[in-house]
Image (cartoon, rainbow, N blue to C red):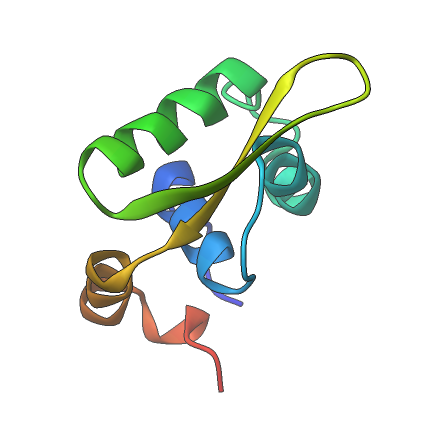
Length: 96
């Protein structure tokens, strides 16, 4: 793959590759790329997810209570998110 994408756009890209994902799954998947950055914190990832949802780029489509009693929300990409990826995703990141 090419250079690192901005984290928010990389989160969107990752969500486009799975049916649905929660913040913990996204962080685990992106840790090899972004794990050493200061912004690699759950609160930052949640802010990005909430912003993407508020701008109608992703949808929350499932919510469960985990074994710790915490709410876990699963997100998936929607049509607008796919449109943005198709328009702005660098060629080196496009799936073959």
